[in-house]
Image 1 (cartoon, rainbow, N blue to C red):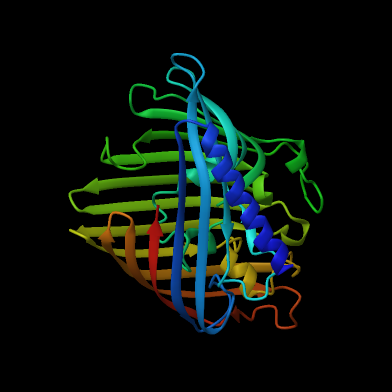
Image 2 (image 1 turned 90 degrees about the horizontal axis):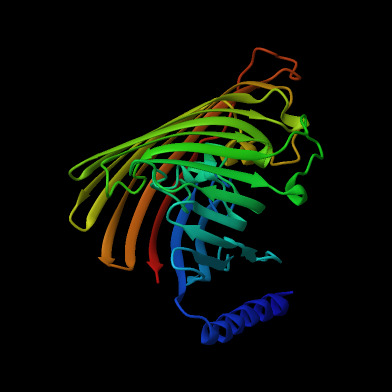
Length: 356
């Protein structure tokens, strides 16, 4: 199996190199993230290991565009991830990432077909200041999904500040097994400002997700930047569509603050969740096979402090300390009023992040 995985990576690299010979405006891109982690529990770390571990994620891909008319361009992207040090003994360390083909027109907008972040997830991309770490937003909040078989539309800018975006899943991803509802799965977002906080010092988004990743959710995000300070806020209501989670629904609230001083950036984030639909609560209560339909009075919170130092335009050093805590009730317990307290999960990481 290891040999097969190596062959897969080798074939992908050869295909990338060969294809680039015939295509213009193509760029090879990727990233390597390696860190040493100490986790008090095995619930939220990427390695899912208690104690000390090395976590490593590599992403590699090709992207580019070709003009097909004066104002219309063909867009393409192919990428995959390799979790080599993170998943010791895993038989599938190579996993698909964003892969799509699409078109872009300055008046009509952009249409992408394939595997990509849903527009619901994309609203939080730039406020997730600990993205791709053990303190990623997805540990607390549901809906951070990259969906295959999807059609994603992004409108052109309206009055230089406003956009309307949508995601629709094709029939192959309209899985209704173990679902409470069988309606179509889609997401929609309305955004104002600049999510990167470059052209505008503010950003706000209202989005809705129906059925994708087996949840119905509505999300609001607001961000504002003043000099070296960036403040972000997320509020979300989420309800599960899975039969074994039929009573799980609740609110999520996250605030974060970033302070940039030259090459050094300090980050802080605090979040609370009462839905129990984030990754941390799932792993802390037995994983995806656990019947959580009898759970109630769920409360999870997350506190993260961290810093990043820009060694070069492509390389960062970072460190973080995150603490997860929570409790819930299970009506099947003999003592129905007794709270089940989750064991605190404290994770400390020091790492390096390289992009090319």
